Amino acid sequence: MLRPILILGLCAGLHSAVADASQGKRNDPVTLSAKDRTSADLFEVRVFLPQTAIESTVDVGRVARPPSGGLLDTLIVYSLDDKKKILSKSLKDKAEHTIQPVRGVLSGFDVDALALTSSAKALATIDWLHAGTPALHKDMSYTGQPGENVAEISFRYDLSPDFSSIRVFADVRLARNNAVVFKQTVTSIVQLNKRSFEHDKNALLWSEDDGKRAKEAIVDSFRQMEQLIPIALNMTSADLNAFGNKNREQGFAAGYNGPIIKRGGLSPDDILIWSNGLLFLHVLP
Image 1 (cartoon, rainbow, N blue to C red):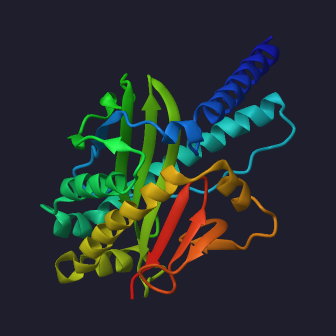
Image 2 (cartoon, rainbow, N blue to C red; image 1 turned 180 degrees about the vertical axis):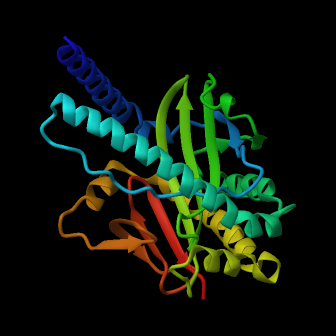
C-alpha cells in the first residue's frame, strides 16, 4: 500500500511543480509590448535592498538521481537529498567564515545610496517612462503590492561561491493596473583578474587596501545598472528572438553562458550576454 501512495504523492508534486513553472513562465514577460511603452502615466518607483551586508553563496553541485523510479530508488533520493543538505550547511558555514574580512571592510559602505541613485538614473533615461522619485524599502514583503502603475527594482548583491566575483542582481518588475507587464532579472558582475582557486585568497584580495577592490566592484556594478536596466526595458520580442538564433555566437561570463549581445564596455574584455536576462561581466584590470 505504501508504494502506490508514495508514488501518487510524488506524481502529484511533480505535476504541481510543472504547472507552477509553466504558469510562472506565462506570467513573467521579459519584454514589454509596444502598447506598454506609450503611456505618459506616472509610475510609482519602489527600490528594494533588504540586505545590510554582502552575502555569501555556495554551489553544492548536482546529485545524480536513480532513473528507474522504484520505491528503493525513491528512498535513495531522499538519502541523497539529506546528504546534500548536510553538505550545503557545511559549505555555507565555511563561506560565512571566509567572507568575514570582506564584510568587515565594507561595514558602513552606503550601498543603499548606490541602489537609489542607479535606479533613478536608469529610469530617467527612458523617455516613455514617467518615473516618480524612487523610494527605498527594506521590507521585501512590500514587493508586488497593488498599484496602478508601479516600477519595482529589487536588488541583492553577493560574492560568488568561489569568491572570485562580486555580483549585483536587479529583479526589475513593471505593473500596469495591478497586472505585471514586465519582469526580468538583470545581472552585473565584477570579477578579479588574478583570481585563485582558493576561496580565502580571493577574499583577501577583495578585503586588502581597506576593501578598495570590493568597493570599486560594487560601485561599478550599480553604475552599470544605469545602462542595463534601460536596455532591458527597451528590449523587444524581435531582440529576444535574435538572441535565440542558432548561428549567434555564444559567450561565457563568470560561470554563466548565453548568446553574446555585445563585447567591450568598461574594458575590451567586458561582455554582455543573454542568460535568462541581461548579464554583464567586467573583469578588473
